[in-house]
Amino acid sequence: MRTVTYERSGRTNTGAQALRLEGMKHLRVLEQGEVVSERALTEAEIQRLGPLFEQASRDTAPAVLVPQADGPEGLAVTLAYEDEESPRVRVAAERLPARGAGRLYDALLEELDRLLTSELHARAPRHAHAVLPHQLREEEQ
Image 1 (cartoon, rainbow, N blue to C red):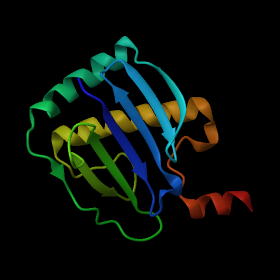
Image 2 (cartoon, rainbow, N blue to C red):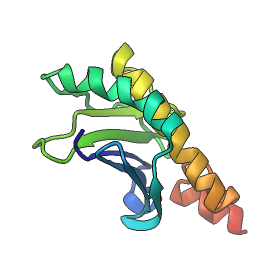
Image 3 (tube, helix red, strand yellow):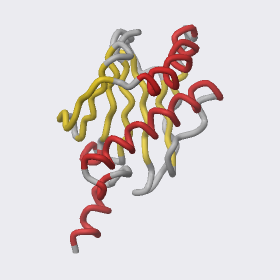
Image 4 (cartoon, helix red, strand yellow):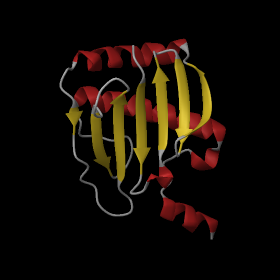
């Protein structure tokens, strides 16, 4: 399996959070492009994600969708394979996990979102969900 990146971000990149899986062996969590944690995937994670990625790898046509969400609460979710020119999936969402990319990709996005959220929660419980820039300002007041 090749390297794949799942990213969720707000209207600006300041809220970007990503999960990079390298060969179904290694996991990296990134916030705003910086690696904040990394570890090996567990057997249970491999068993959950493996079949989903196997099905997705058989899909030759990218499922790119233009984000439609508007307003400050809108999120963009992207799934990209490192060796492909454009993202495999890009959808807009008002809430996570993102939906609308088809049954196969919706299931994969849900698993990746669950994994990213749990990794961020383990690192810093306050940032366990996607935090948009305007929400940071509200929380700091």
